[in-house]
Image (cartoon, rainbow, N blue to C red):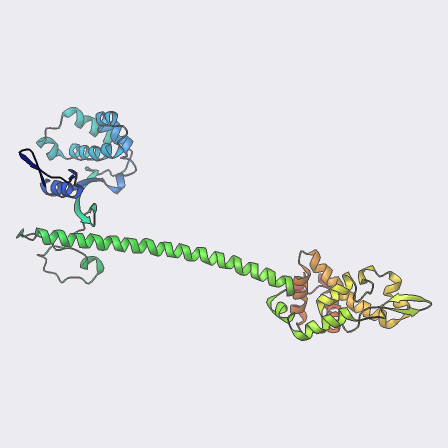
Length: 368
């Protein structure tokens, strides 16, 4: 406070606007308490803001065309007044307004239209920290009832009605505020539960994509998780290194010429495929062998070895032509005949399947 001439004035600016004080004062001055007008659910699709502007408050709609909230609030209040016979007579509502509103309402193409399409909803004004909040009043439980109170959450959340009016208005206001805040917290929890569920579904999809990518990478190195682990086995790696590093002779002399030779004792399908595509330790690739070379130049052992291995090579090419990688193809073969089965036994099984599944092109069901 400070003195200015003969007057004492406040040296600190005081904002004349106080939303909470204005709202709470207006709610106390309103007869019956603060209310809002709300369209009944069955009439919601028909009574829109545009309909109110054209048929209920056309003058306000033209003057305040940009203020949709004002048009709707005053339009619903006028519609309620026009549809309430006693209130319209008490306030001497002009006949031309009554006729215009009733004519427009009767033209609405709705079945079982209620006589009063607008309902009054009581409001509760309270303050949370520095924010003014106006919400619909929670239904109250009468204190005069003789029935036993229910233990349901809805019943326990109700505020006892102050029917006696014995000075409990402040307590009633506080209790109503607590109940509204409890309801808001419940709504926030429900929204959070939905959000968590949606995030969980998104995480599931993300994890499935990552696991799928991981499995695809594993198949690149072994055809399956088991195959990928098998390729890390020290014995298997030793066999691969031995087959690759095996030195000459890579050919043998027969009938006065050099004939290509297959690597001995191959026990891995991937090494076998490498022999077909590129050859092992400088040997000629099996896919490039001529018809005579496949016959072994009269050496039955070479001819028989090539025949057995060629059975597996044909199956590998068949699976590759179906769109599988060589690793995936080897995984299918190993799964069908057993991961620990030798190359010789796999070849014999393929030959046996040619007779068993002759009607299906000699292919095992896993290879079709």
